[in-house]
Image (tube, rainbow, N blue to C red):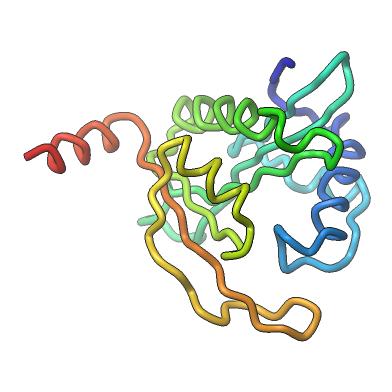
Length: 171
């Protein structure tokens, strides 16, 4: 398994994997498949997108994006991670997230945040192993196929901020 920065040429593979996540109804409120042409818009030159490959085939991806477009949240980024169905449970998500965390920190991000459907236990376990903290639950945060669903908010402090927070927690 290798990881690398994604390019717009990876958009079709990313769209295929994201569409599987949409179809499974376990990872996103999104309900319509996306074409590679839509995924290309995710490449903003600021927020990293990474892919995990096996023998030249993209089998997972992780990407960061703007959290809230205001000056005071400039270093806080939202992230997503998706793995192709056939590759789930094989460490692909961890590899992609390790690379995304490193690239995000290098690009100036100091905190990564996301919302995970509360029933998505594999993703919650992965985030715990990566050091993300579950901040809380947003009840009835969105509707998926007519059913209100809860999400768990997770965060990870990066770099200097993470070290300072750890120092404070240690007393």
